[in-house]
Image (cartoon, rainbow, N blue to C red; front, side, top):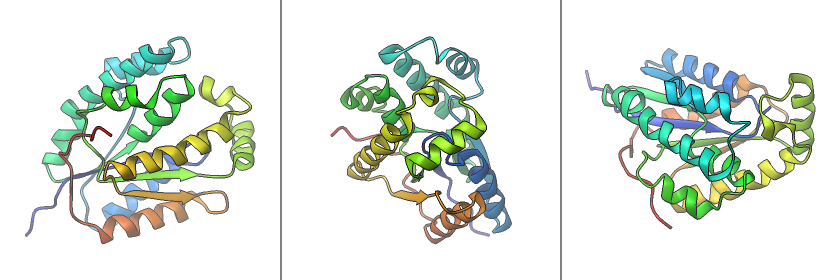
Length: 213
């Protein structure tokens, strides 16, 4: 039996696009096809990740960006890399694309963020879930805001625009990107589209550091 090649797949996007539900459904779909799957999230569940999540409304700008990056490096070392080395597909709820959006909303230049994350693992596939700003606002109103970025009335429009910029940045770094618009589809439909892409691309480029551009 051929050993599976481990890989990292990230799911990012504005609040309200269905990341968590889509990731859980995607994990089930991949497992049904015989893939070993590990799910995780950022900030991570480590002590540093929990601190970052708990204080993200009080800590801003470069300081928060450094905390997020520090947690990411530890996350890779203690959780992501070990599972990849065991041949598992790691699905991460938020990763580099979210940094390139949320920290820019906080006034941090992209160049600083790329330098800060210069030695992380690139995802083998970066999935960006998106929706119209109107749809996002409606969903956030129904769900409630989870953090300060979601409490900004102009946040959905700015996030959608910045995720478009992040897509181009990631493509320029050689990262495969899949954009799925969830305005008119269910998380199950979104997961099926992602699974089709993942299953059609069994190879892995994991291990490459982010490129400086």
